[in-house]
Amino acid sequence: MMGAGFIIGSLIWTALISVSTPEVTWLVVAVAVGFGQYLAILLPSIEPGQTLESIAT
Image (cartoon, rainbow, N blue to C red):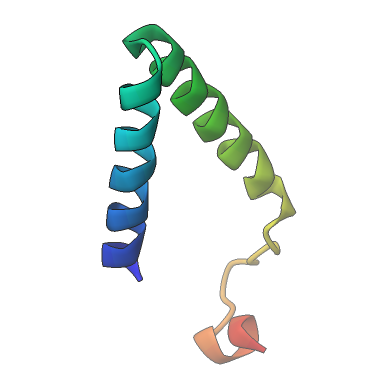
């Protein structure tokens, strides 16, 4: 899964850098990372002491 993410990310990076300037590419990356961090609030809460089995179900 992580390897696929690296490959997809590399392809997106290559596509962005080939059609735009480095400044635009970094702006797109910064906005995408910020949006991804914002989406972390949608993750379920994990209380202290929970077992893996209770988190997975």
